[in-house]
Image 1 (cartoon, rainbow, N blue to C red):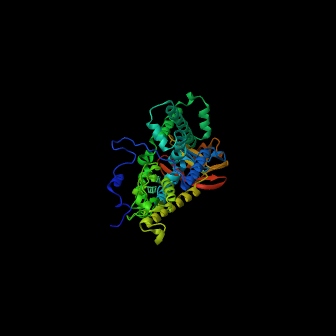
Image 2: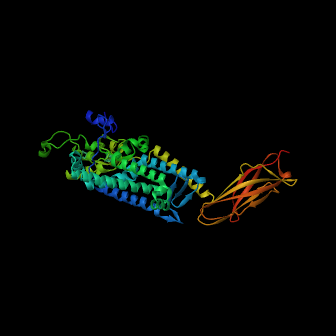
Image 3: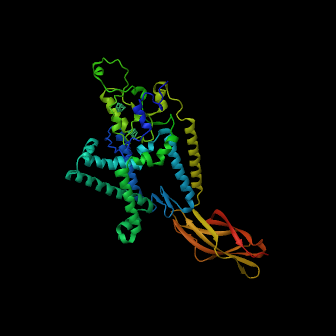
Length: 483
Ligand code: SF4
Ligand code: SF4
């Protein structure tokens, strides 16, 4: 039978166990703590650059202002969203949902083509854990071996001091992350107002912050890789999105197997057994933050962090073999040896389908966004009112009006009646000059001659004019007595 990537018959029974148990759970169900060794190499360097750039972007963004507004604001409480400086009002909620859908689908497309590249390179969970919290841990408790020794050692003043220092810094970091995310929800101005005013004025806000800081601390200090392995829904979706053409961190089993630990016979050159390039040193496993063995093939737990690529490349360099025994490649690329035989078309039919849907969604979002009116007008018959008789031959209805100026300049807005003929509109109070990024409320009266009415329910058609230009037409009901 041909060696199959998904049914690695090169693996013995012991290795096949990975299908039945989680690498981070002991047989008795208790947690197996992962002491991941610090990785180094070209991928770790590249990921560090990406991670710290994204971190800087995440921290700076709430402070960047465009026309006096933050660059990003995701105020779910007041349903006010600002994405890249563009303000989305509650009336634009459908657009926000469509943008989020497009974003999720684009991650799906990326996953189909490049596996969990999001997890390894851009996910905040990975970035905070690997490039902030674990760095602090390495600094205070030393490398993986030293951490194991420290945890096994009985409590002493040094151990207590190290643990206390680490967890104090973790708590501060968790508090900062909580504040950072909050600044995306309520904005920096409101956040600073809360920070600088007495806590008694913000008891509920403070309670929420303590709870969420505790949650972040729990995730990064204790829960860690379990978030990716058991909690993250995206990790579960991945199995439905990837296929043998997906490019992911992959072990070249054709080149690596049969794996072997170097023997005397190897050193003396008298070995006659078949040998793969894998020397079974386990370095790819000890650096893995989810404690899996990539040699078992693509697994849900793999967050594509590339640490095993760097670890194996270092080993291959030391034993003078070509690097890339573990590399970014698809299962088919290894199985059919694309490097030697040439790869088939870049995207398979499924991925082409995903890209097609993504393009349609992007087009819809773009068209809807461009057609979004600069000034929204909501006209409603005043609740609780029926109709008024005006003299012997006219009927009047009251209406409420809401102008929403979504632009960054003041606008002059006006409602004019387009139908029925003979109807007149009388503004009740001052309205029409709408400041930028503002909502203005107003009331008006519509009077229609009885001759133009047809029973109890009639229709009035309005035109919304902004700076003298008709931008939208609306219609609403006009009540009148039965004839
Ligand atoms: S690091 Fe490379 S050589 Fe060592 S066990 Fe992993 S795959 Fe084999
Ligand atoms: S198998 Fe490799 S790429 Fe996957 S999580 Fe472990 S170290 Fe990272």
